[in-house]
Length: 153
Image (cartoon, rainbow, N blue to C red; front, side, top):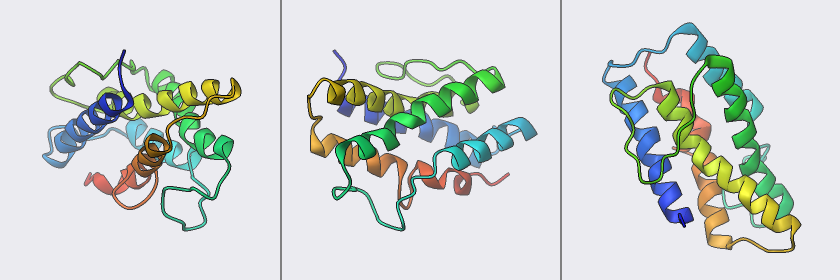
């Protein structure tokens, strides 16, 4: 059974591989990829009022919902662009990495949010430290929230 730590580490590795390809000039986003990244940012605004993660003063369902919605947004983005979301835990990103690897890495953490939401609906609270790490992955300086800033094209 995969752990959240493995999922998060793999997500960062896949995200980093794609960003490195872009920053080194080996992956230059096309117009569709640029639009998809912009749309992802618009659809996943954390509405956090400038607060930094973790958002411990928010109810569980709000915190987990912010994380889980990334999964649905990324599935739609992948379908729209024709990219395949792949499992990241125990796998290395393909080389050269590009949009599919970027979306797959981010999706891994959003998918965990969906798992936590199912557990919450069953009355099981997820580990607070894991929720905080997922919130930090998606929101705040240097996070996925700043995704557009990592591209130089």
